[in-house]
Amino acid sequence: MKKNHLLLIILFAFYSVNAQNEIESNPFERKNDITINAIAAFNKTLNVSYERHLNNRSSLGIYYFHVLTTDTSNDMNYSISPYYRRYFGKKYASGWFVEGFGMLASTDGKKIYASEDRSIYTENPDVINFALGAGGGWKWISKSGFLFEANVGYGGILINADKTDHTIVAKFGLSAGYRF
Image 1 (cartoon, rainbow, N blue to C red):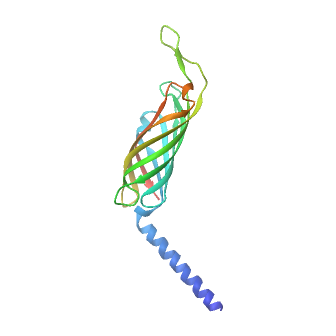
Image 2 (cartoon, helix red, strand yellow):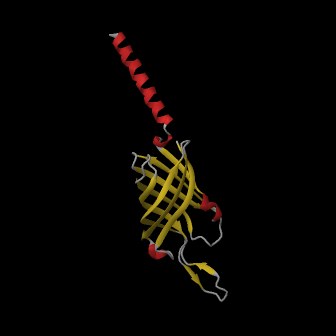
């Protein structure tokens, strides 16, 4: 009886190691992507994302955006945006894709221009709002696991849109990253 259990354990261990080697040998079938947006650096912002592949055609991810400067040219302070993607490429989770996303964001309140020199005064404090949107893009991955992505998305603010100067949100980027 002990020999049978030992034999089953050895076979299971061999099967597990063999399956792990197959996944590691093919970088296209790794399950996780992490990217950083190259355009964000020019706008003095940080923009990173993490994506988990559910299968070769779909994935779930989260996108984080944060403004690194205090100048008043950017109304958004930060945002967290979960998304679902559907891929149409021939390789594993790559090629053309469409996505649906939600966005929880902190933006500046409504602004009024009350002086002759067009100085900006904030009427309301920062506002937390929520938006839903859709977008699309393209992802390319190398054999070593490095990837490049271009995407664009637009959505409408559903909650607290009346407390800001905006009713739409946009996200776009040219990102580089790694699949692991």
